[in-house]
Image (tube, rainbow, N blue to C red; front, side):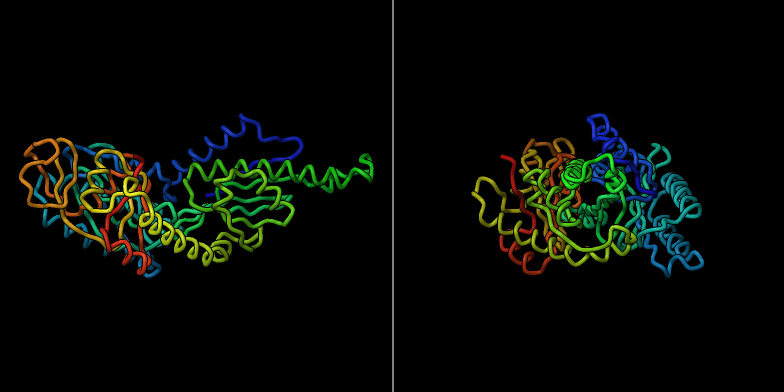
Length: 407
């Protein structure tokens, strides 16, 4: 999708009205793109879906180059459809088959241009339809249930997986958001052609001062835009490519929190999205690994009242809404139990009564982590996956599921 555009110069200031329009445009763009980078709000909306009956089809399909040749994805989709048909009753099968037909129709109409896979969440009976491009090829799978099956998708997501790339120059600036190897241009800003303003009507002794002031004004507006876009996508870092003078002016107008997350990188402001993504890839990997180490250190060094360190303790804090950041060993998998009445989650899969509310109406949970992730999204907690082997080992010394707490 083409990047949004605007002009910022001596005649086009970043007014409060323009700020509001930028926020609205970014949010509208995030909603309209049929195959898109997911924002945190999209994940929260998916986690909140619950039909309380009719099945939602959750389908993950690889769309690698081999699958795209001669519509090879059709065979994989047919196999998934056949698999689910053998495990459902007749009434459910009719509903599921209708949803799968809708998914095939969408793929026939338009395969996602970017990414190496797609995820669909569909329930025609409830008017539910979500289609998402995936930057990595997740294993083919299909699940049905009253809520979307999000575990594969959530494993690709975490705050450290989204970064803002700011490429600045005096005549053109560009903002990108990257996510797991996929990069999308969000805004393109036309700046001030300073040479065109420095005419004979401007005294020679004022031309340098005017050029510097114009550049500073533009950098201030670009810093505000970076804050807006970073906030909407909840990005973990800002990667900056800019000339030294503009870089200094841009940094001077960022918040302290944004400055602490700023890292420089080198590329051309005129480069393609693929070239910019490649230039930033190594730095992004370093930042992710560094963030994992810092997170594990925070868990280890925090005041005991500010962290949960056991899996069940973490689940209890999550149900109580106390979790600020849920930290998960990415390899952890376990079954458990959930209370239908109060929603509490438990490690013990053999419980007959809820220890919290006393109700006996319990559900077996095949994937305890997925249930915990859904609760984390509903309660607006941050999610952090630990993938580095050394960090996973340090985390598992206490528990594969831990949390930094709000209180």
